[in-house]
Length: 370
Ligand SMILES: Cc1cc2nc3c(=O)[nH]c(=O)nc-3n(C[C@H](O)[C@H](O)[C@H](O)COP(=O)(O)OP(=O)(O)OC[C@H]3O[C@@H](n4cnc5c(N)ncnc54)[C@H](O)[C@@H]3O)c2cc1C
Image (cartoon, rainbow, N blue to C red; front, side, top):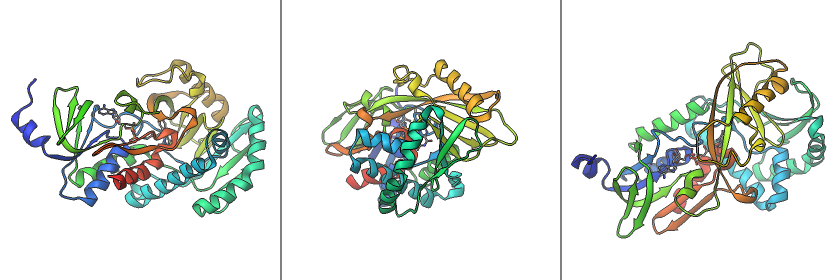
């Protein structure tokens, strides 16, 4: 196919800012640029019709910290990085809420609970021992009083206790994406799916080669390609697939709000009188190191078992399942990568497993660098 004169010369010409990746980071980066420079031509492209990596496939946890994860991270990263990541997530969550409005993004602050069974009793003990210290640090970092508290009971079977975070809330991932997408369109940002970037050359202008045999010319190129970044350039970003299942509709759900188990390897929440459950990546880490949006039957079977035994205490049907791809760093590194790669070429990626809240912060950071 040859592109028409109109497509080449008018639809996709004279681009000031070309953003690759129509996920939460790409869209918010485009919005921040357009708000600062209303006359600039801002174009967001994606190889899929819409952002099809993590942003429309996540669990909608508006989360910033849980105690087991903090303790794990402190063993693998510096204290500064661990608390800096938490602060970015918390600030990002507040930004999403204030920019788009709780109702438009389906935000409900029901809190979150990390549950423990006799199988991970040690984590509970360590968590309780560390609660006060972590609360004190987070009070200084975020200004929030007693974020975490211990609960001896939960409504769920087999639990021996829980640690509650009073300041987290759940979002409706569909509403959030729709709201941000619509706002980007309203600002006049051009959103084109079905264009895959292969490589670029950086001269007087940046020429971007695509898999569709189309060369795009732009003054600035911003990669918001998260997990898929390593397909384009060498960076410490590994694709980590996550599986999600959602139950049939159930009257009187056993729990509402967000829950986690096993250092966050299992996470679930209520939505539309169903339970959405994700995780169990640790059952097949190699199999889930993948760019492919496919199901992993070992993990789906395990998630279904967990839903029956640990959440409902009875057999429940799965109505739907899917997967998404996260971008993680080696050695538990969790701070996102936001930097200039070359003159006028930038990267904002590696959002990890709690990237929804982070996305607003990362989008602001990359625009500050630009
Ligand atoms: C199963 C799952 C559950 C999750 N649950 C939560 C949660 O509850 N709470 C939370 O905070 N976070 C969660 N996350 C993480 C969160 O969704 C991500 O961190 C966040 O959405 C990342 O946004 P992004 O815009 O950086 O990346 P993405 O949404 O992945 O967007 C990157 C886009 O770049 C496009 N792209 C890549 N390469 C190219 C190319 N060469 N050419 C054109 N386009 C390209 C991709 O198609 C993709 O659409 C979850 C993730 C998964 C997978």
